[in-house]
Length: 267
Image 1 (tube, rainbow, N blue to C red):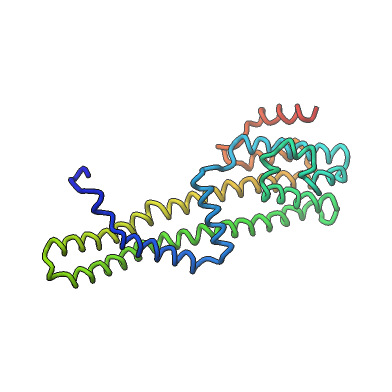
Image 2: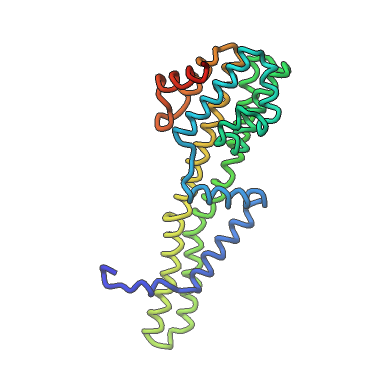
């Protein structure tokens, strides 16, 4: 517009149909049904911008401390009533952010169950939880790979749309320069649209999904560090401190702040 152009010149329905239609086809053909559903879910999360923040990690560390204190004072068997049915647990009900997040809740409970049952040695627990964490990381990356595939394909799809436009232009070359100019502009718009949607929307969206995945993985890693440390015999406060130090600086509570908060819980 600053150069004197008119925005309506960019609106050619045929180009949108070709480019977005082929891109949707690439997405559907390349993705199993469960990955398609996960892509929709991940995109919604990326658009909403909701990720685990400092307060959520602070609450998570407090919950872990309380669980470990119960296990230390009353024996591991005392954790069974909380871990086997966390939705009925008075302890978990005080921490709704974790209670309402199915993946994190399941990871925590699945990590504590072998310790309570005595089915695994403490030094083996970290390997077990790390294997589950790796599987979840790979699964969470499937939507990222598909979105990058679509983003990398869009410039080529834009060229296909432009070639189709040029073919139409050649068929109408006898209609005069105005018609030819309009159809050439439509063809070039296809190239523009493919590149712009790829590098302006789809690939940045894939990166945002990847950052959200990293945030979710950080929660699980925090749980793993704390639970495995407690299983190896660390004191509750020490196990929670190990988990705190594994967090990124932007969501990491202060050591003194956390210690004051959990000591209050201990009393």
